[in-house]
Image (cartoon, rainbow, N blue to C red):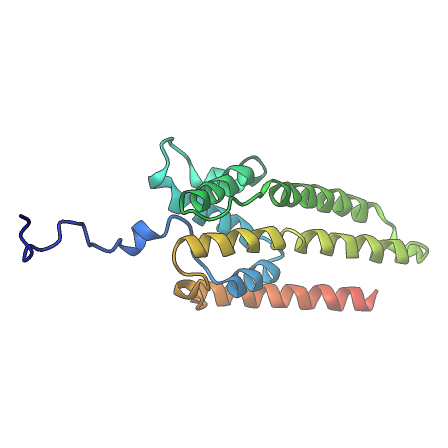
Length: 196
């Protein structure tokens, strides 16, 4: 007969936040604000933080800063890590391929339009409409990758048990600093466009 008064033998330890968070956790609003304020440069930090958080759990040696810098080659792998963790958690598998590809294609198109904008002679006055059209296209292709990043972040937060990303929703001094620089740059860009 079993001893009814024996304590349970199961491991009842709760995982530490480092163990629970297989991915970088941040609030979607914070991600969106920093992404837009920094003209999408925040995405490099975002990729770095995800790979840095994943690094101890991977069987292979990785260099998080390189995976962030060359994200074109690793965005599918990062999204696959999220999809696999979702599947392991009993959630429906995330079909991420189109969203990961969208990030790459939007970045390529933005770079092409940026080169086109450099070649437009706005001084003649004849090309003003073309210049603003290309500028609008650049803006769209800067902002478009935010959608897949938010989709990935939503899933990463849910896997970490913090769906709203509340544990990283406050703005640090560095976040505020870069946001203010970004607001200034957006203002300068708007003023320059308005004057031309």
